[in-house]
Image 1 (cartoon, rainbow, N blue to C red):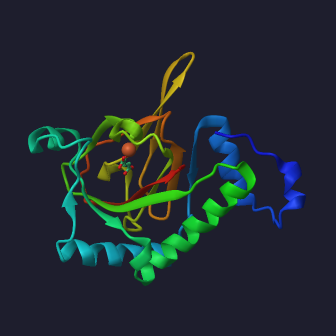
Image 2: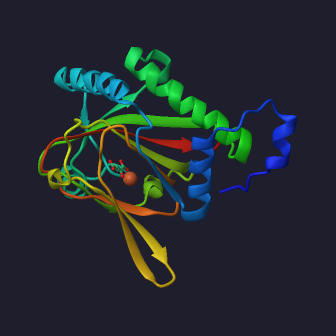
Length: 217
Ligand SMILES: O=C(O)CCC(=O)C(=O)O
Ligand SMILES: [Fe+2]
């Protein structure tokens, strides 16, 4: 990730945002950041209702991996259903979502010169018994993906026993370390797409989220 140049703050109309600063610092230090309550409960409920409505309307598609692989292989790698979200014709819930994301993206661009020009997000539902095997998000031949973001929309009483935790693998010099991220509602995890392999462990209770990527040109 590009280094930040705080001296230039003065030259840009700029107010420092402690939360965003923490996120940037963590991504620079450890390549990932976990933010609890990035979305408040009301926002989570709004997004979850919108997701469920679209899911019931059957708009979701079985997620594919890489270039058209056959169904059976695809299902042995990932079992989620996804629906891409188009910002241009977003509904009220998705507007709330993109307002928050855009505020962070603007800040990243102003402070870190990350040059995020594109973003893509999809809703995801992992039904019971599904998972997403260990992977790197750039395996889809998209080197423009710089930061991966996952926003969890599960119910307030989500418990670790429900499964579906995200495991992020860190290659420390001393050997591999694993970070476990439970998909609590309102929590967002951001990590370097080209650097960190990760995996969604088998889900025991349907698991809801929005996943996306911040991309350079
Ligand atoms: O849902 C998650 O926690 C991660 C999803 C993921 O790795 C992906 O969609 O590429
Ligand atoms: Fe991923």
